[in-house]
Length: 74
Figure (tube, rainbow, N blue to C red):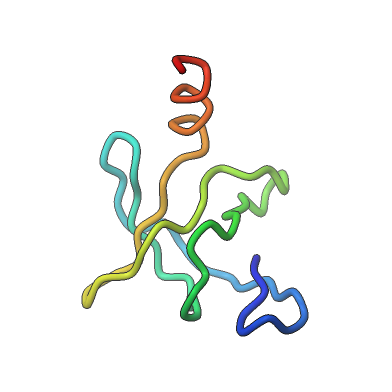
């Protein structure tokens, strides 16, 4: 979910492609400036992570638990 270009909220479908400890690759058609947009699991509508970045090959998300753990340890 996000607000691409400051316009109305949109929800885009996609899949998690690969998982690596606290990050994951996904194929959601993310727009520019969408870092921090929540990524929801459709089966229960719970936020599982946030969009982190795009590189030339794939999109990267970070699991929300990583951020919660960092907040607890500060």
